[in-house]
Length: 249
Image 1 (cartoon, helix red, strand yellow):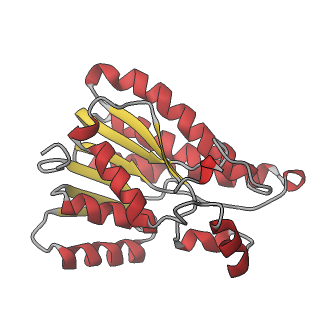
Image 2 (tube, rainbow, N blue to C red):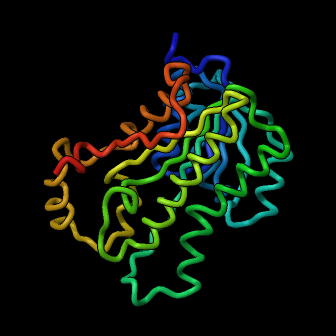
């Protein structure tokens, strides 16, 4: 079956996020063997327990990893098994007008949204933990790439950097048939929305710009499974737009 992940071992980085957890669950439903990571041990344990309750017979491993800590990244790459897929679903949002940007605020956004991902992939490749024919999927955003919002420059810039990085990585890994793609979601109903300086009325107004309404973590997870599967075996270096029609307006 082209959409099956049977016999594939998938590393999910940021599995404690809403989208990361949904992706883990959908990968499990597609018969993948899961390797989960999260920054907070307690949240990682809760996520692991939730997935085990859904499918107790599936093999699953979990590791604590902080992408802002290079030693934590190196440790993960050293102890984890080799995998057939990597999903990175991490991000931080700090809403600031451009005139208030500082060296510290720039680094906070770039360290989480871009730098940590780059260092992780580098470590995994150096330690030969990404198998031939694997698929790498980054959760990017429409922000910065297709849409601009006031106060959102740093988040948008970091996600645009991730998209650019993924295309070069796709070229470099093509000889090993390793595919690299991004998913660019629009607004998805997750805890991440709490980082926006908007009230419920603002969200209702904004959602009117989406012909299909805001998305759910499960909507994005479907795209993740597709890009990991053999159904997407001829797709690399792309940005899969999942925005409920937002950019049509």
